[in-house]
Length: 245
Image 1 (cartoon, rainbow, N blue to C red):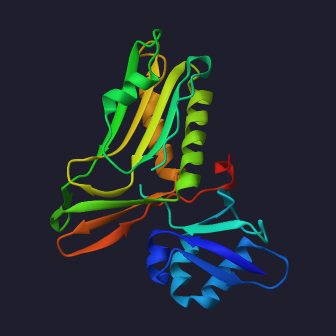
Image 2: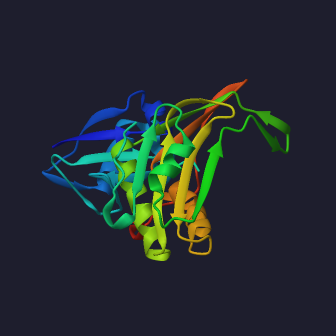
């Protein structure tokens, strides 16, 4: 059968295209066999596929997970450490999940996730850093380029929010907005905002958990453009079956 495979970040650069068609024997196969077939067809992928995550139909897939005709299969490196959704107003717990291709207002996000009972909002805002201290001296960055597996990224943002609510049930509104595309030094890369009735009801902890968890399971990657070259920045976290929603 023929499988349609999506490749992201480093893997896409190696192959030279984002989507490929791969022939595998039989009417069903497994992620392990698909990996082997990919390496046989594209030997240059071998090293990167060893650490790459796999997804079937926008959910993490492992080892002998079945792959059937018509499934959407994706491979991508560990996430580096738009589509909009309308805030969910149910039970006074508004939520925003967005991949933003243009600058956005943090004030508007805060206004959208607060209610009359809200007394505290904790906001984490990531920025494009222009200088990084390293053993070799100061490393300069000209810009970042962000890429996302959009539909899966939005689904995993919702999973992060659900995990936050399970751990901190008094959190009211949640907003997770990730920029994509080219970003200059000094611009926001991501904002995670969590609202609660009081500051001691989990909003600080929830925002910290949100950014840490996003760096583990939300498929977004960044390419760092420096004066002397460019490279994808890959994380170290390897998803497990426990990361499935």
